[in-house]
Length: 116
Length: 111
Image (cartoon, rainbow over all chains, first blue to last red; front, side, top):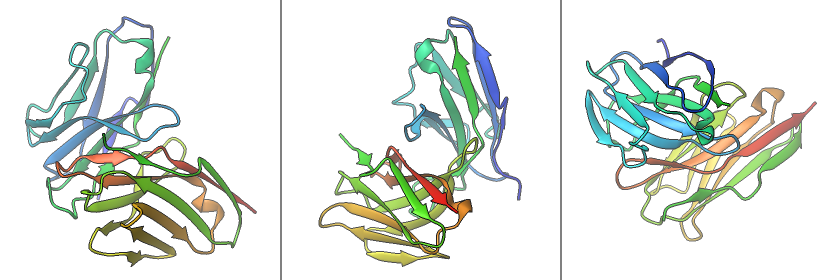
């Protein structure tokens, strides 16, 4: 079974520029998550999709971050404009369902973003 | 607010020894806990989980212990190997289904 795919793996931009990340979840997984992981810290949830609908975006900085999952499969996360503090690894995860206590989240390799 | 934290940021063990990684959580209403392993340049990898109605669960070379009285979680790795070197995160699932991660413990295995 193929895992969660993410691209690009690395991205370096200057502040105030825009950037987009792409995620392809495990086939058949209805729930997709985007996490931000700052160096030395655990991942922090940014947004959660159930199929193509947003379940939780309470920690997404909506003035600069946006995400979509139009067809309920792939997802993109965008930052516009980027700030220095956005430097982090952006992880995508997927799970087969939502809310079940045995709902394991499978993570992709992440995209390491550096904002100069 | 909710928080999950680890007692030690780094742990160094000799190959073949047992490792114990600890975690404290603050939300007594959380009913599900997970340990993840994260190697350099990779995403977190599921290791083992435990529900709050249990106090111990064993996997292959790993054991998770849950003490709800003191809100403490631990991961025990038997016969630690160089391939176990990584950062280990505990996470709790809150009532809304959101995973709250701790800060991580870096395990270093000396040959």
